[in-house]
Image 1 (cartoon, rainbow, N blue to C red):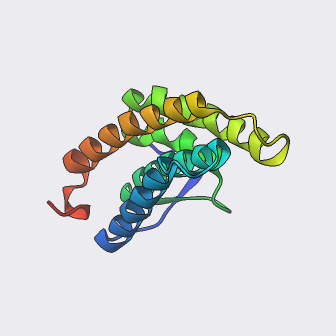
Image 2: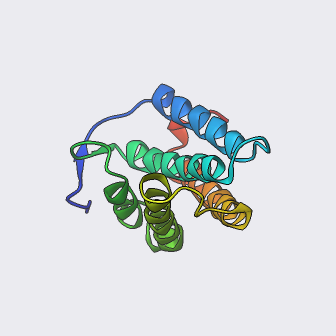
Length: 142
């Protein structure tokens, strides 16, 4: 069973590798000390979103319409199981906070917010990599 927010769309190891490479860049940028907390939070959020997108794509789906972040996070529990719920909820909350900071009031984010989001992304990375190894080892190189 899949959520009604996705449509079937096959993937390939090259696509997953490209998404993982982009994730690594976003994760690294989120730790760059010369960047503002706002920028680092945006990069940490992007890293988390890319992990969620990897799950959707590795499962053989694409989110309907434009790349809707909320729907991407909603698909996680169905595709990964209930173990992903905490990460999905945290990333969806980060999405809302990022939107406020990005569109309404710059400077809402501080170093503690960045550290908390990076910790959540690190946890989620472990969940996603373990899930990939178990369910889709053909999509990741050893």
